[in-house]
Amino acid sequence: MPLNQAEILAEEQTRLIGERLATKDDLEKLELRLTMKLGTMTVAAIGIMTTIMKLMQP
Image (cartoon, rainbow, N blue to C red; front, side, top):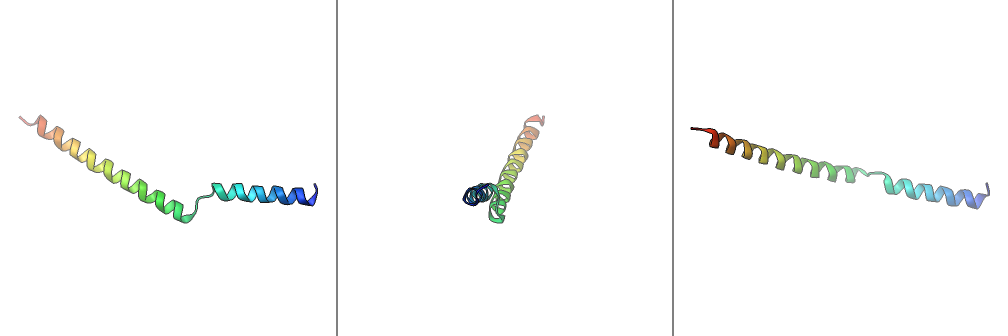
């Protein structure tokens, strides 16, 4: 394989890998988003269960 072709291939592979790898900052942002969603779902579930329990009381 010619040298310039190998260099172009290596540069393109480096670019593709760099675009697909998650950084530590990316993972921290994802963790925060997931935590917020889980918290929201927990609060909603507690509210729904409380409402159902109140409606079922005689």
